[in-house]
Structures are given as structure tokens and as C-alpha cells.
Image (tube, rainbow, N blue to C red):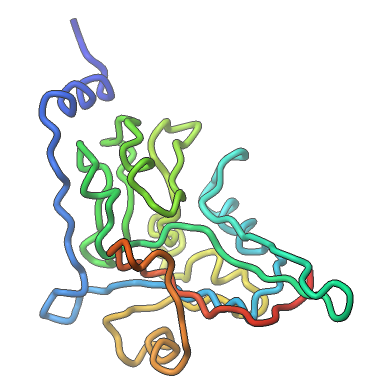
Length: 221
């Protein structure tokens, strides 16, 4: 009896679950390895959703699922000077990513050259361990490939062409900054030095690489 690729990998995972080995890009001593991260400046975000549309188009994300979601909360202070707050839900590209450690086939991995947490759809058996382990709830099963999927900072699309992630390129107010944590001269590093930023669920020890500049009073829709 012949087994399909997915069946074979599933059987292998059931017989012996092995933890995927993650590479800490920031620990590479030669300085050539990048550790890419992103900042969402909520004080500049206007809730236009250009980032969402660009992500879907460039990465061919089907309807019904999303790699990037922009949350719109408000209006606040509705009786006087109403305003909204905008926040981003997407992969945090954790330095200590639980999705990698629980993956039985090595499909969830950290790219050694960029530090980006990604998924190899060929190795994924759809077990959803990574979805259950992700404390940010940003992973999903792709309805076409049937593999786990999420934001990969456009690693296989825009980044492969030497461009910025689609969401960064599309943002009309420059609310998104993308760069290398290992490069002290990068715009991202400069912002982190001089601006107060926050990260989600730091108490879990995931060390996320999606930073936010929290809004006090944001723009209007």
C-alpha cells in the first residue's frame, strides 16, 4: 500500500514527535545574519486597511482567512472630539517561538538568514499543534494548501525581490517601520532607542519582534 506525502509525514509524527531546532539569528557572531522586526506606530495609523489589502494581494491570501488584521476600536470620547484606536494582529516572529518547538515535522522554522518565523507547507501535516501553541492566535490552516499559514514578512514574495513587506509599502502614513534589530544604524533601531514601544504578552517569554508605539489619540476612519 502506498502512502501519500501527507500521510507518511503524519505517521512519522505520530510515531516519534521531535522538536524542531530553532536558530537564534541575533546570536550569530559574524554580524551578517539579520534579525528582522517591525514597528507599528499606532499614532500614525488611520485605519485605512491598505496594509490588509496589500498583504492579501501580494501573498495571494484567500478570502475567509487573513495573515494581517487591523483592529479598529472606538469611537472614544464620542460626545466631544471622537477618535479611534487602531492595532495590528499578525505573527509576532517570536525569538522564542512556541510554534517552532511544538511542530512535529519541522514545518515551523526560523529562517537562518533573516530570523523570520516561517512555515514549510510541504512538511506541514495540518496537525494544528502550532495553532494551539501560538499565544497570539495568528495562525490558520490555508484552505488551498491545507498547511498552516501566517504572516512571513513577505519573505517569499516582496523580500525575495529586495523590497519591503507589502504592508509597509502600502501604508500611506508611514505607520510601519521594518528593519534589522542587528543593525544599530537602521531606522528601526533608532526608533526603538528613542521612542517608547510595547510588545504583546512579554510575560510569556516569547520575546516577540512586533513592536507598537501605543496611541493616545489616533486619527479618524
